[in-house]
Length: 349
Image (cartoon, rainbow, N blue to C red; front, top):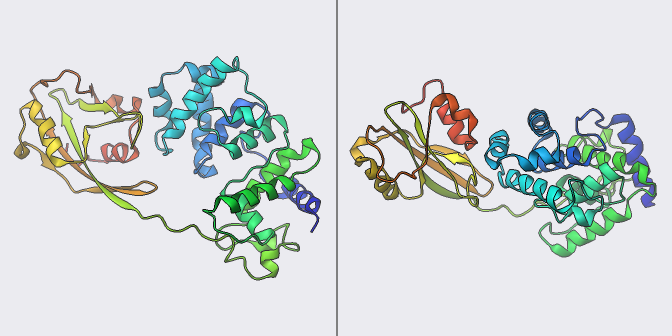
């Protein structure tokens, strides 16, 4: 089939049936970039809740670059994949320091920003600058594999390069069509050509879709091999002082919950006991509650909370910050800790 047929069908469909009222559908590159980072591995409905908070607090890239990392992470709390927030902050500082506060317009320069890969850079270039650049996220791969009956191992770099070449060959010739075309790819994959139960009867590609003609829609694209999920035991020490403040520590920048604030967290129970001993506590002083679970991409966290109140100052003054309950919301907390502390009646307090 002529590739021009694909882009013409997609653009016409997007104009009639696509999404047109998303708050980031603008030409301002800062707002486009912010939305693209938030939308990585996150549903549109969720981002619609967070996006206005960010744009209100950080209306410009300069405002975001100047903000403390803790404030950025606090606003990001609950969105997950916190490396995105750390990279967002770094990239804003790159734009200010390296590009004079003006977003670069080329895909290759956009790719130099922290957290911006090829597809994200292409989306920014297409939406903000109408550049003829191809995107290739999970939704787009699914559309292309079905419409053109491309069959291959999704983990194979050679197959991915073939999809990139196909995506580039489909671009419309006119630059002004790039926003509608790019948004159309996103809309089609998210709302019609879905992973399961695709709505083929509503698809603008139904007449030309090779997977549909070959009755292979359920097969393509091939599924990625399941990744083994490992269980990681963790132990939380929820320590309150005489005033009722909770001890919080800033997590290392890398690793689980990087840069967020959490109660002292240990992979070994003995390490928790050793830490508690700084406050004159032994194991019998700690109240243990039922373990809770939290799923990360490739790990299942099995978290055991242990709690106590202390009237003795630490032997180490740099253990962390004592934070009163009314100020917990001012700190970026891991979602499981936020949820645990905000139970109607916290189990251990």
